[in-house]
Image (cartoon, rainbow, N blue to C red; front, side, top):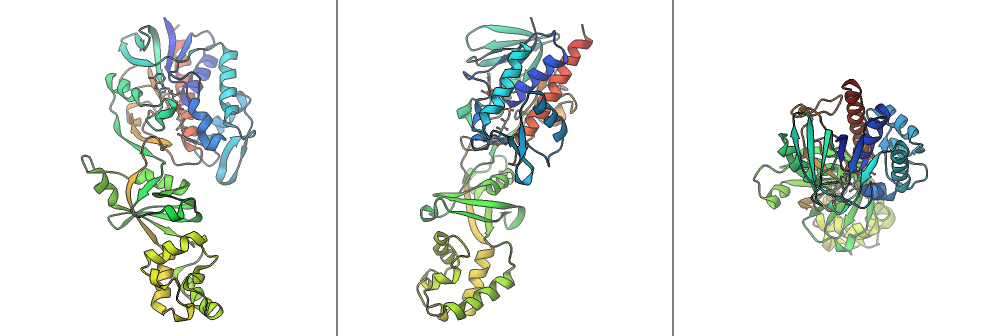
Amino acid sequence: MEDICIVGGGAAGMTMAIVAKRENPACRIVLVEKNDKLGKKLYATGNGRCNVGNTRGPGIQPVLAFFDSISLMTYEEEEGRLYPRSQQAASVVEALEREMKQLGIRWIPNREVLDVAGSPDSFTIKLADGSTIQSRLLGISTGGKAAPQFGTTGEGFRMARNLGHTVNRLAPVLMPVTCEGDFRDVKGVRLQGKASLWKDGSLVAKESGEVQFTEDGLSGICIFDLTRFLKLEPGENQEEGFRRYRITIDCLPEMNYESLVDYLKKRINSLEELAGTWILHSMVPAKLIPLIFSKAGLSDKMDIPILEFKDRELDALAAFLKELPFTITGGKGWRTAQATAGGVPLEELDPETMESLKVPGLYLAGEITDSDQPCGGYNLQMAWIQGMKAGKAMGSFLNNSK
Ligand SMILES: Cc1cc2nc3c(=O)[nH]c(=O)nc-3n(C[C@H](O)[C@H](O)[C@H](O)COP(=O)(O)OP(=O)(O)OC[C@H]3O[C@@H](n4cnc5c(N)ncnc54)[C@H](O)[C@@H]3O)c2cc1C
């Protein structure tokens, strides 16, 4: 009989194991991971640099202390984003794995957990090779459904449901979106701007940052963050549901509409005979200019001399520079998503210990819980914090029940 079995060796699972073992050095822990190595997803995070947390996020002090305790040196970039000083995600996994080895925590790689069952004083964990593990306490940290190529295919939700938990509606978030239109000509263009999300004409959310154009839509951190607000009604047709949403991009957030109109008018005097597209020269990436003319209904003005522009045409260009509209037709889905919205509701867990309020001895941490966060290190920060809480609670429960 194990004291603790942890299912899923990602950020939350490894943290849970380390903190539990430190709290109760005598306890027997086994961690089961379906991939051949621990923390496979972590290698891909932060474009291979792993944005481990954010100094602006809640609960950062214990997270920094945890990093220090595993000898992970971090440094802060703009907007509070924390990375390993080496700028290599591998450093994070190596530090966690080394600490697990040093503490004598056993882990079983390449072994998928098929199901778990609870009885009053122990849990039975069924593995894909037909074997079972009996454990006094059970931690589930199987992540969500986002990026299934890293092993997170959502089985933890089924396990939680079988044990009596609710699972709030799951949706991929922090992903690119597809939009109506053909964007092959602007594929790869990047723009510093402000993106707003609208539903049925009402503003839902705004984000500033880099917008990236893809061949079929929009990407970039601020677009990713907006996808957390895309909510389809139960039973709603996917495409119809998405089409109720629009993203508008403010290409020049530092200028208001009126000053933009004035600026374009001044340009007429200096650019006079040049072709129409010169009116936006150097204001936005060159490849975007035809798209802006087209969305403003002015494609036929791209080649006329700038002197011939009418006031209402300048007004239209300024309006579209401030609110370049895109109708969303869909999200790019689980494979491209960085996080899962939905999952086990936090109300069903003790917020201090992450212990289930439905099944004593069961602890949940990380993306399996309904606690998705914006980009910027906040999702991993949540995983470390919840993993620490669960590990500490498991270790001290065992201490108190000797
Ligand atoms: C491309 C990408 C980039 C990202 N970048 C960042 C970033 O820079 N900063 C940030 O804060 N967040 C980032 N995220 C999000 C972040 O990686 C996750 O929110 C975080 O890893 C969740 O931690 P977790 O421990 O809950 O789950 P995971 O780290 O996903 O770990 C879950 C583990 O459980 C295992 N598992 C699943 N089912 C089973 C089973 N049945 N049996 C055994 N094992 C199982 C999986 O193989 C996996 O190893 C990124 C995500 C992606 C996809």
